[in-house]
Amino acid sequence: MKVSELAQVGGVTAETVRYYTREGLLRPHRDPQNGYQLYDSESVRKLCFIQCFRMLGFSLGEIRGLLAEAMQEGTPSPNTYATLAEQLPQIHARIQELQALSRRMDQAMESWQDIPDGLPTGHLVSRLLDDLSQPVIV
Amino acid sequence: MKVSELAQVGGVTAETVRYYTREGLLRPHRDPQNGYQLYDSESVRKLCFIQCFRMLGFSLGEIRGLLAEAMQEGTPSPNTYATLAEQLPQIHARIQELQALSRRMDQAMESWQDIPDGLPTGHLVSRLLDDLSQPVIV
DNA sequence: CTTGACCTTAAAGTTACCTTTAAGGATATG
DNA sequence: CATATCCTTAAAGGTAACTTTAAGGTCAAG
Image 1 (spheres, rainbow over the protein chains, first blue to last red):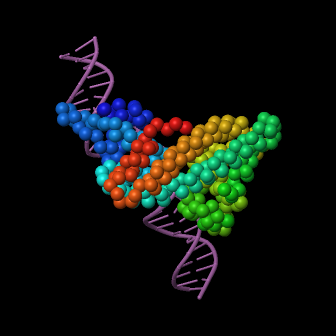
Image 2: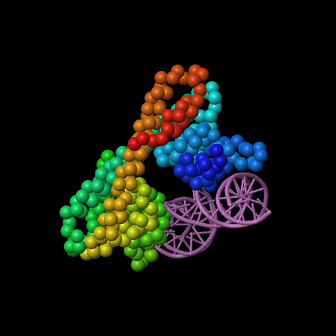
Image 3: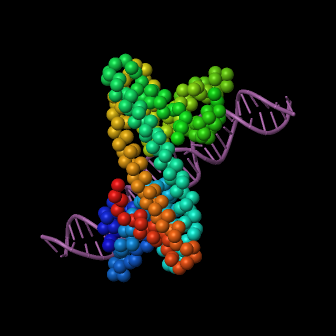
Protein backbone atom coordinates (compact mmCIF):
# COMPACT_ATOMS: atom_id res chain seq x y z
CA MET A 1 0.00 0.00 0.00
CA LYS A 2 1.52 3.29 -1.09
CA VAL A 3 1.15 6.58 0.73
CA SER A 4 -1.77 7.88 -1.33
CA GLU A 5 -3.65 4.63 -1.04
CA LEU A 6 -3.46 4.67 2.74
CA ALA A 7 -4.42 8.33 2.69
CA GLN A 8 -7.53 7.63 0.68
CA VAL A 9 -8.59 4.72 2.88
CA GLY A 10 -8.09 6.83 5.98
CA GLY A 11 -9.73 9.94 4.60
CA VAL A 12 -6.68 12.15 4.99
CA THR A 13 -4.19 13.64 2.55
CA ALA A 14 -0.99 11.89 1.50
CA GLU A 15 0.91 14.74 3.13
CA THR A 16 -0.74 13.99 6.44
CA VAL A 17 0.26 10.34 6.17
CA ARG A 18 3.82 11.42 5.42
CA TYR A 19 3.70 13.79 8.37
CA TYR A 20 2.51 11.06 10.75
CA THR A 21 5.26 8.85 9.39
CA ARG A 22 7.90 11.53 9.96
CA GLU A 23 6.56 11.94 13.49
CA GLY A 24 6.94 8.24 14.16
CA LEU A 25 3.26 7.36 14.46
CA LEU A 26 3.31 5.14 11.39
CA ARG A 27 6.18 2.82 10.50
CA PRO A 28 6.00 1.77 6.88
CA HIS A 29 8.61 -0.51 5.39
CA ARG A 30 10.41 0.33 2.20
CA ASP A 31 10.28 -0.98 -1.29
CA PRO A 32 13.97 -1.71 -1.80
CA GLN A 33 13.57 -1.11 -5.53
CA ASN A 34 12.48 2.50 -5.42
CA GLY A 35 12.50 3.66 -1.81
CA TYR A 36 8.72 4.07 -1.70
CA GLN A 37 7.07 3.79 1.69
CA LEU A 38 4.77 0.80 1.91
CA TYR A 39 1.98 0.54 4.48
CA ASP A 40 0.20 -2.59 5.63
CA SER A 41 -3.18 -3.25 7.24
CA GLU A 42 -1.73 -2.44 10.65
CA SER A 43 -1.06 1.06 9.39
CA VAL A 44 -4.70 1.34 8.41
CA ARG A 45 -5.74 0.37 11.93
CA LYS A 46 -3.23 2.76 13.40
CA LEU A 47 -4.44 5.62 11.24
CA CYS A 48 -8.00 4.95 12.40
CA PHE A 49 -6.77 4.80 15.99
CA ILE A 50 -5.03 8.14 15.53
CA GLN A 51 -8.19 9.76 14.24
CA CYS A 52 -10.28 8.35 17.09
CA PHE A 53 -7.90 9.66 19.71
CA ARG A 54 -7.47 13.00 17.97
CA MET A 55 -11.22 13.42 18.12
CA LEU A 56 -11.17 12.58 21.81
CA GLY A 57 -8.69 15.39 22.30
CA PHE A 58 -5.40 13.50 22.56
CA SER A 59 -2.32 15.15 21.07
CA LEU A 60 -0.19 13.40 18.49
CA GLY A 61 2.51 13.08 21.14
CA GLU A 62 0.21 11.24 23.50
CA ILE A 63 -1.01 9.03 20.68
CA ARG A 64 2.55 8.23 19.70
CA GLY A 65 3.13 7.08 23.27
CA LEU A 66 0.04 4.92 23.30
CA LEU A 67 0.92 3.36 19.95
CA ALA A 68 4.47 2.69 21.08
CA GLU A 69 3.24 0.82 24.13
CA ALA A 70 0.63 -0.96 22.07
CA MET A 71 3.31 -2.32 19.80
CA GLN A 72 5.39 -3.93 22.55
CA GLU A 73 4.70 -7.64 22.44
CA GLY A 74 4.36 -9.49 25.70
CA THR A 75 4.45 -6.40 27.87
CA PRO A 76 1.30 -5.57 29.73
CA SER A 77 1.01 -1.80 29.98
CA PRO A 78 -0.50 -0.73 33.28
CA ASN A 79 1.03 2.61 32.40
CA THR A 80 -1.19 2.98 29.39
CA TYR A 81 -4.18 1.73 31.30
CA ALA A 82 -3.56 4.39 33.92
CA THR A 83 -3.24 7.10 31.30
CA LEU A 84 -6.50 6.15 29.70
CA ALA A 85 -8.27 5.66 33.03
CA GLU A 86 -7.20 9.16 33.93
CA GLN A 87 -8.40 10.71 30.70
CA LEU A 88 -11.79 9.03 30.46
CA PRO A 89 -13.53 11.00 33.21
CA GLN A 90 -12.29 14.23 31.65
CA ILE A 91 -13.66 13.15 28.29
CA HIS A 92 -17.01 12.36 29.86
CA ALA A 93 -16.99 15.70 31.62
CA ARG A 94 -16.28 17.49 28.36
CA ILE A 95 -19.12 15.66 26.64
CA GLN A 96 -21.44 16.61 29.49
CA GLU A 97 -20.51 20.24 29.16
CA LEU A 98 -20.96 20.15 25.41
CA GLN A 99 -24.38 18.62 25.84
CA ALA A 100 -25.41 21.19 28.39
CA LEU A 101 -24.26 23.98 26.10
CA SER A 102 -25.91 22.60 23.00
CA ARG A 103 -29.15 22.05 24.90
CA ARG A 104 -29.13 25.67 25.95
CA MET A 105 -28.43 26.70 22.41
CA ASP A 106 -31.31 24.55 21.20
CA GLN A 107 -33.61 26.22 23.68
CA ALA A 108 -32.43 29.68 22.71
CA MET A 109 -33.02 28.90 19.04
CA GLU A 110 -36.46 27.55 19.78
CA SER A 111 -37.46 30.63 21.70
CA TRP A 112 -36.41 32.68 18.68
CA GLN A 113 -38.81 30.81 16.46
CA ASP A 114 -41.66 32.66 18.12
CA ILE A 115 -40.26 36.10 17.38
CA PRO A 116 -41.74 37.45 14.12
CA ASP A 117 -38.98 38.04 11.62
CA GLY A 118 -38.09 41.61 10.85
CA LEU A 119 -39.88 43.10 13.78
CA PRO A 120 -38.10 45.54 16.04
CA THR A 121 -37.17 42.87 18.57
CA GLY A 122 -33.55 43.65 17.85
CA HIS A 123 -30.56 41.79 19.05
CA LEU A 124 -31.42 38.17 18.70
CA VAL A 125 -27.90 37.21 19.49
CA SER A 126 -27.87 39.59 22.37
CA ARG A 127 -30.59 37.42 23.77
CA LEU A 128 -28.55 34.29 23.13
CA LEU A 129 -25.75 36.13 24.87
CA ASP A 130 -28.05 36.59 27.85
CA ASP A 131 -29.24 32.99 27.67
CA LEU A 132 -25.78 31.52 27.42
CA SER A 133 -23.72 33.86 29.51
CA GLN A 134 -25.15 32.63 32.75
CA PRO A 135 -22.88 30.31 34.70
CA VAL A 136 -23.25 26.73 33.49
CA ILE A 137 -25.06 24.49 35.92
CA VAL A 138 -24.33 20.93 34.84
CA MET B 1 -13.40 46.73 36.26
CA LYS B 2 -9.73 46.53 35.29
CA VAL B 3 -8.22 43.93 33.03
CA SER B 4 -7.05 41.58 35.78
CA GLU B 5 -10.37 41.73 37.55
CA LEU B 6 -12.27 40.69 34.44
CA ALA B 7 -9.67 38.01 33.84
CA GLN B 8 -10.17 36.55 37.28
CA VAL B 9 -13.96 36.56 36.99
CA GLY B 10 -13.75 34.89 33.61
CA GLY B 11 -11.11 32.37 34.61
CA VAL B 12 -8.57 33.49 32.01
CA THR B 13 -5.32 35.43 32.19
CA ALA B 14 -5.12 39.20 31.88
CA GLU B 15 -3.10 38.66 28.70
CA THR B 16 -5.98 36.73 27.17
CA VAL B 17 -8.38 39.53 28.00
CA ARG B 18 -5.97 42.01 26.39
CA TYR B 19 -5.70 39.73 23.38
CA TYR B 20 -9.47 39.51 22.97
CA THR B 21 -9.61 43.27 23.29
CA ARG B 22 -6.94 43.74 20.62
CA GLU B 23 -8.93 41.37 18.41
CA GLY B 24 -12.06 43.45 18.83
CA LEU B 25 -14.10 40.93 20.80
CA LEU B 26 -14.22 43.10 23.89
CA ARG B 27 -14.65 46.87 23.81
CA PRO B 28 -13.64 48.43 27.12
CA HIS B 29 -13.79 52.15 27.65
CA ARG B 30 -10.89 54.12 29.01
CA ASP B 31 -10.17 55.76 32.26
CA PRO B 32 -9.27 59.24 30.99
CA GLN B 33 -7.00 59.73 34.00
CA ASN B 34 -4.56 56.93 33.35
CA GLY B 35 -5.50 55.23 30.08
CA TYR B 36 -6.49 52.00 31.81
CA GLN B 37 -9.00 49.78 30.03
CA LEU B 38 -12.22 49.50 31.99
CA TYR B 39 -14.65 46.63 31.49
CA ASP B 40 -18.31 46.54 32.50
CA SER B 41 -20.76 43.73 33.20
CA GLU B 42 -21.44 43.39 29.49
CA SER B 43 -17.80 42.44 29.04
CA VAL B 44 -18.25 39.73 31.64
CA ARG B 45 -21.19 38.33 29.72
CA LYS B 46 -19.27 38.58 26.48
CA LEU B 47 -16.29 36.77 27.93
CA CYS B 48 -18.55 33.95 29.08
CA PHE B 49 -20.19 33.90 25.66
CA ILE B 50 -16.77 33.63 24.04
CA GLN B 51 -15.83 30.69 26.22
CA CYS B 52 -19.10 28.91 25.53
CA PHE B 53 -18.71 29.26 21.80
CA ARG B 54 -15.03 28.36 21.89
CA MET B 55 -15.99 25.13 23.61
CA LEU B 56 -18.59 24.48 20.95
CA GLY B 57 -15.85 24.78 18.35
CA PHE B 58 -16.39 28.30 17.01
CA SER B 59 -13.32 30.29 16.05
CA LEU B 60 -12.62 33.71 17.52
CA GLY B 61 -13.39 35.18 14.11
CA GLU B 62 -16.83 33.61 14.02
CA ILE B 63 -17.47 34.71 17.58
CA ARG B 64 -16.42 38.25 16.74
CA GLY B 65 -19.01 38.21 13.97
CA LEU B 66 -21.75 36.92 16.26
CA LEU B 67 -20.90 39.49 18.91
CA ALA B 68 -20.87 42.28 16.36
CA GLU B 69 -24.36 41.34 15.20
CA ALA B 70 -25.50 40.91 18.76
CA MET B 71 -24.50 44.44 19.55
CA GLN B 72 -26.52 46.09 16.80
CA GLU B 73 -29.60 47.58 18.41
CA GLY B 74 -32.90 47.27 16.62
CA THR B 75 -31.61 45.01 13.89
CA PRO B 76 -32.98 41.50 13.79
CA SER B 77 -30.25 39.17 12.57
CA PRO B 78 -31.66 36.37 10.44
CA ASN B 79 -28.10 36.05 9.28
CA THR B 80 -26.91 35.07 12.71
CA TYR B 81 -29.86 32.80 13.18
CA ALA B 82 -28.97 31.03 9.95
CA THR B 83 -25.34 30.67 11.00
CA LEU B 84 -26.30 29.12 14.29
CA ALA B 85 -29.01 26.95 12.78
CA GLU B 86 -26.43 25.63 10.38
CA GLN B 87 -23.87 24.86 13.08
CA LEU B 88 -26.15 23.18 15.58
CA PRO B 89 -26.62 19.89 13.72
CA GLN B 90 -22.86 19.63 13.29
CA ILE B 91 -22.36 20.20 16.98
CA HIS B 92 -24.88 17.50 17.78
CA ALA B 93 -23.18 15.17 15.34
CA ARG B 94 -19.82 15.80 16.98
CA ILE B 95 -21.27 15.09 20.40
CA GLN B 96 -22.79 11.86 19.09
CA GLU B 97 -19.45 10.76 17.71
CA LEU B 98 -17.68 11.63 20.94
CA GLN B 99 -20.20 9.62 22.89
CA ALA B 100 -19.89 6.63 20.62
CA LEU B 101 -16.11 6.76 20.93
CA SER B 102 -16.07 7.19 24.68
CA ARG B 103 -18.55 4.35 25.08
CA ARG B 104 -16.28 2.09 23.10
CA MET B 105 -13.37 3.20 25.21
CA ASP B 106 -15.34 2.48 28.36
CA GLN B 107 -16.08 -1.00 27.10
CA ALA B 108 -12.48 -1.62 26.17
CA MET B 109 -11.34 -0.50 29.62
CA GLU B 110 -13.91 -2.73 31.27
CA SER B 111 -12.81 -5.75 29.33
CA TRP B 112 -9.26 -5.09 30.50
CA GLN B 113 -10.34 -5.27 34.11
CA ASP B 114 -10.71 -9.02 33.74
CA ILE B 115 -7.18 -9.55 32.54
CA PRO B 116 -4.85 -10.43 35.44
CA ASP B 117 -2.19 -7.76 35.79
CA GLY B 118 1.32 -8.71 34.80
CA LEU B 119 0.36 -11.87 32.98
CA PRO B 120 1.60 -12.52 29.46
CA THR B 121 -1.53 -11.16 27.85
CA GLY B 122 0.63 -8.50 26.29
CA HIS B 123 -0.45 -5.54 24.26
CA LEU B 124 -3.40 -4.18 26.09
CA VAL B 125 -3.43 -1.12 23.93
CA SER B 126 -3.07 -3.27 20.90
CA ARG B 127 -6.39 -4.67 21.92
CA LEU B 128 -7.84 -1.19 22.29
CA LEU B 129 -6.42 -0.54 18.88
CA ASP B 130 -8.38 -3.50 17.61
CA ASP B 131 -11.47 -2.46 19.50
CA LEU B 132 -11.39 1.12 18.31
CA SER B 133 -10.00 0.82 14.85
CA GLN B 134 -13.12 -0.70 13.44
CA PRO B 135 -15.27 1.71 11.46
CA VAL B 136 -17.53 3.69 13.73
CA ILE B 137 -21.18 2.74 13.51
CA VAL B 138 -23.13 5.56 15.10
C1' DC C 1 10.46 7.69 -25.19
C1' DT C 2 7.94 11.30 -23.68
C1' DT C 3 4.33 12.86 -20.77
C1' DG C 4 1.76 13.05 -16.62
C1' DA C 5 0.94 11.27 -12.36
C1' DC C 6 2.96 9.34 -8.89
C1' DC C 7 6.96 8.96 -5.28
C1' DT C 8 11.13 10.96 -2.29
C1' DT C 9 13.24 14.66 1.04
C1' DA C 10 14.28 18.80 3.81
C1' DA C 11 12.86 23.03 4.89
C1' DA C 12 9.97 26.71 5.06
C1' DG C 13 5.20 28.48 5.46
C1' DT C 14 0.42 28.69 7.54
C1' DT C 15 -3.28 29.20 10.93
C1' DA C 16 -5.21 29.72 15.37
C1' DC C 17 -4.63 31.14 19.79
C1' DC C 18 -2.32 32.72 22.77
C1' DT C 19 2.17 34.09 25.66
C1' DT C 20 6.31 36.53 26.45
C1' DT C 21 9.31 40.34 26.26
C1' DA C 22 10.64 44.91 26.79
C1' DA C 23 10.21 49.43 28.06
C1' DG C 24 7.77 52.45 30.41
C1' DG C 25 3.79 54.85 33.30
C1' DA C 26 0.27 54.51 37.43
C1' DT C 27 -1.13 53.13 41.95
C1' DA C 28 -1.30 51.28 46.55
C1' DT C 29 1.27 50.23 50.88
C1' DG C 30 4.43 50.32 54.83
C1' DC D 1 8.73 58.13 49.30
C1' DA D 2 10.49 53.73 48.03
C1' DT D 3 8.95 49.56 46.37
C1' DA D 4 5.96 46.20 44.81
C1' DT D 5 2.28 45.45 41.95
C1' DC D 6 -0.47 46.82 38.92
C1' DC D 7 -1.33 49.10 34.03
C1' DT D 8 0.07 50.40 28.86
C1' DT D 9 1.96 49.10 24.00
C1' DA D 10 4.13 46.89 19.98
C1' DA D 11 6.45 43.24 18.55
C1' DA D 12 8.30 38.94 18.87
C1' DG D 13 7.93 34.10 20.31
C1' DG D 14 5.62 29.56 21.02
C1' DT D 15 2.99 25.37 19.93
C1' DA D 16 0.27 22.07 17.41
C1' DA D 17 -0.86 20.11 13.35
C1' DC D 18 -0.49 20.39 9.22
C1' DT D 19 0.61 22.29 4.29
C1' DT D 20 3.42 24.00 0.73
C1' DT D 21 7.53 24.41 -1.87
C1' DA D 22 11.26 22.90 -4.40
C1' DA D 23 14.10 19.79 -6.52
C1' DG D 24 14.37 15.57 -7.97
C1' DG D 25 13.53 10.19 -8.84
C1' DT D 26 9.93 6.42 -10.56
C1' DC D 27 6.42 4.48 -13.19
C1' DA D 28 2.47 3.36 -16.52
C1' DA D 29 0.33 4.64 -20.90
C1' DG D 30 0.28 5.69 -25.56
